[in-house]
Image (cartoon, rainbow, N blue to C red; front, side, top):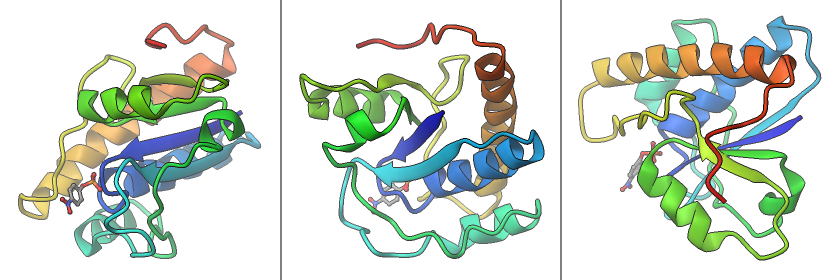
Length: 155
Ligand code: 4NP
């Protein structure tokens, strides 16, 4: 299973999602590939936001070595599942999606809820977002391990 987590800048939400997803996948003994990217390229090459790095570190997850990158066309065939943090990210991915794409696009949170952008708020916003990300990772792993079809996948 190859999963790409996508937000706007790839410095706040999706790096935390990549870190938490990786940790939970490893803890479950699964050999899945997890990566993250942004629909925008403004922060390409930059490390994650330090507020997010601290919030993840408080949960034992090190995201400091990640570097932002923009979603590229090959992602739509290199990954099985591309998970958007909010509806705006999903709409952008649907626009970027090439005709030969094989990846399924879906919301990151299996309830369909947006993972809100904590960029313009205080550091506590990152922890709240991490609660949502952590719960979403756990339920996604359980569902994918059981072979459930991905139902939230507008194509
Ligand atoms: P992210 O948050 O999409 O969760 O990485 C943002 C980071 C930067 C910007 C917007 C959102 N920005 O406008 O620079």
